[in-house]
Image: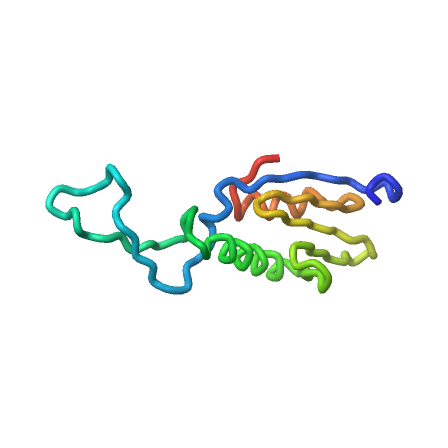
Length: 126
């Protein structure tokens, strides 16, 4: 499709994607090994953000990302919840495909605008 319609294609990777998710409930955990404070070995930690290894982390990342895209006028595909698209004023489209923390962006020429918005919100690699 990219070659047929002479579209631009960019690949991005979000660093530490699962840590962007917001927790919706209180989650406590034991202190990590080696992080025990003398005299407080039996204390637990209250998590303020998602953490790798939590069952909810991936779901929270997808919710955070979906909200981010919706706020910018992108529509989630009815056929695949990891595909977002936006029709621009002059009839062109921008598509973003999300797989865990990797993204493909496809467009005629408007990729840099979306890349800039993503960069301001999430730490990413091109």
